[in-house]
Length: 429
Image 1 (cartoon, rainbow, N blue to C red):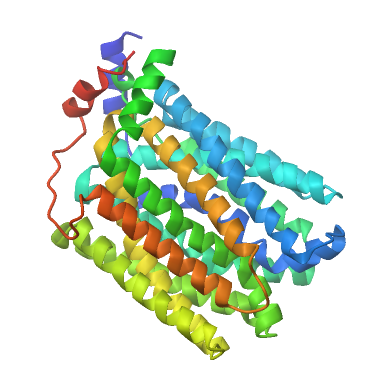
Image 2: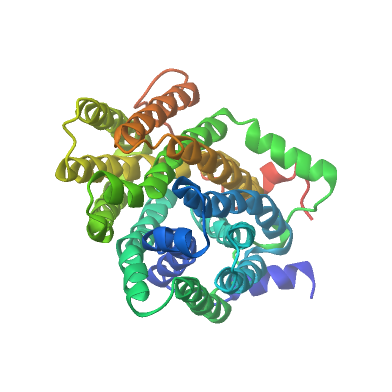
């Protein structure tokens, strides 16, 4: 097929409706979340079944998954810029199904960690869904779509710990991995039947060394993209620290392990509500006003949490309240940080999403693991670590905005011809 005919075929291909597209992308993203959150109730059981010597080491199940997630994004994003979004998403989801099953049959903790790395490596493919959004939208419209996918995506943390707990009542911990595989299989079939290619053939990159290097320079050389990616990274690290420590906190600090799924769901609900509110107001108020304000409130709430925890006043209800409020402001911040990081690099959306995802996932995993290692039977390490992440994120935001918060910023659409013109400097096939 000639190039013009192929372009015409892509343009003429029937596309799913807006609601279905948002839900499918969110479901793809949810394959990552379910692989994390459904595991949480099983951590003590896995530690006992596989003879993990140090209870803190069970957090490595999360760390290895996130490390694979970060590394995999370098590969999948690049492949999607060359071969298109659809084949990469389908191939990655297929590998996810296999890796999840293999995690569930191992009898060694170290082998489990190895397969969890592969599990994360495969799950990284769904980050390409961010490129799908960038192919179709830009600016505040893109922020709205990302917020809506975030709302659906956050339904998984609401349900996944309870789902994991329910599975454990009826089956061994290995069944949780099987559930991950089944869910990913459903999403794979949905994408196979309904998702059309969103990357036009004329915008596909050739993967020569010079072209890839040019794309990387474009992504890492843009101050706004780089700084907001780093802000996302440290904020994401604070959430990973919470996810990694929450089971121990409810068990060892409050001695109410059975309440963990319910309280975890409550905090996820506040994140979802905040993301939905962002989708309703972002086109009117703008990404910077919302995200910068939310980040300052995030810092204020976590500062108060540190004081309460350090003075020994922490109780179950205060912990849940602080987490729920801070995670709502987290959601308002990162929903827009992600859109602002992607906005300047539409010409290389696949490689851009992969590099940003690598930094965010791998760096966030390291930050979360560093905070998690400090767990000492109190909530102080988590509260102090979360505050530190907020302060560092503020530094990166100030660098991105040249020291000025809340300023209006108008960016021309980077889609269509604008993307094509920008991309010619890095090599379009």
